[in-house]
Image 1: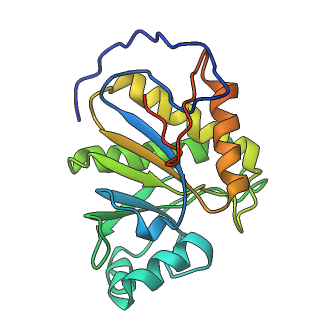
Image 2: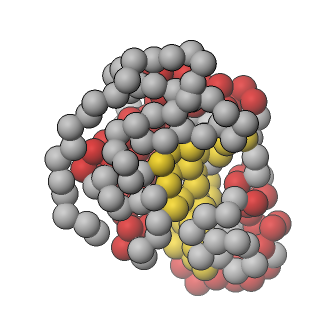
Length: 211
């Protein structure tokens, strides 16, 4: 992992006609609507269950896209604790790795849900950095069957990634958030505006945002 470096934030004021954010010149953050299993990046993140079994939603989409060899590899890993992450190969996908993380079930962790969800993102970023991943794509963790409210979950996702970039500005070339629906994409965009001081947002056909 690269050595921590301080970053001075200097962002232009919000412009509703744009969708691009700039914290550093080296890390691009993108928001796209699509299928997580079809992203062309170094690593994608799977919203896994503790036993790493094929499930519904994101997990089901990734397991279906790869096939039984992913479940075979997951069985060898066995288990993943809430807030932690494990890594498998990308197999037939256009990625080097699939990073599996287990989000908290909302209201089932004695008030520790927010920290556990943030730790999901940090755990994935750490594992990716250790493997020299340069681009990584996240789904919306915890907002499916685990019931995490979308507004809270996207706020935690944005805040955790921004904090990482402030500490390690050169670690990744791109951190991508993949929304499953237009509504989810709008939630990411709103969370950015509400949580990044003086953030600018530059809109184009790719829903691309750049730090």
